[in-house]
Length: 133
Image (cartoon, rainbow, N blue to C red; front, side):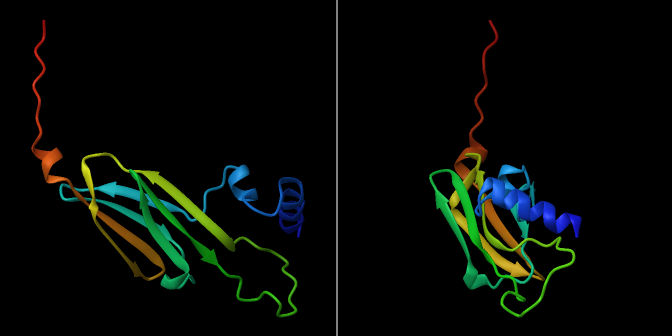
């Protein structure tokens, strides 16, 4: 009950949109890792349909945005405890130049959005030796 009241107060004080971002909470949670072939980004968004998510590349930035709808909204319920987040979300990640933003794939698996970005072959071959004087 206290948790819900705190969320309501913070939403009122900070405004209805982006109150979680202002508190330093990032939603959805994500993991970023790489292997020798690609960069992988995994975002947890259970209950979100792929049609409700957009994945875009803007310059060297990967932007993932969407909406997670509350299935109980307008159903006459009153939350006693609410820990899951609902509403609009947006995550932006700067992608290093060693990855090729022309080769991006995205898919869903068990509530996780998986984005794969291939390594750039040109950048991988570039080795520049610096002379020490």
